[in-house]
Each structure stands twice: as C-alpha cells, then as structure tokens.
Length: 81
Image (cartoon, rainbow, N blue to C red; front, side):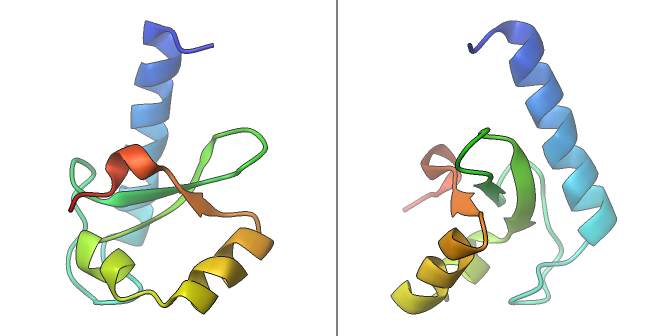
C-alpha cells in the first residue's frame, strides 16, 4: 500500500530519525535525510535507523547479517552506487 500519504509520512519519519541522530554512528559525518541509507523493519517496512552512504559502504557482510537479525535491513532504494 504505497500512497502519497504513506510516502509523506515515511519521509517525515526519516527526517525525524536524522534530526535525532544528527551524525552517522559509523563515520561521524553529518546526516542528510535526502542521501542517507534508511534501515527498515523487514516485517513492516517502517524506517528504524539511518546511516550515511559512506557508513553503509563500510559495513561488512557479517555486520549486515547482524543488523538483519536485530530487525533492520536496508531500504535498497536509498543505497547509491
């Protein structure tokens, strides 16, 4: 169910996460809600955390697996090459 309202609410949740966190937990760089990698709950698709693009690229496959075990997977549409 992807409607305009759902998209707006999701964007506001991401803005809130960035506003609370301010800097990336991995790299320490200032986060931008437009470019951050959004981690979502795999069951609901709701945003649960954010990291910078560089912070995401620094993650090893095993740390990505640990995140998934904790209930946070990346929203692949927010990962930039």
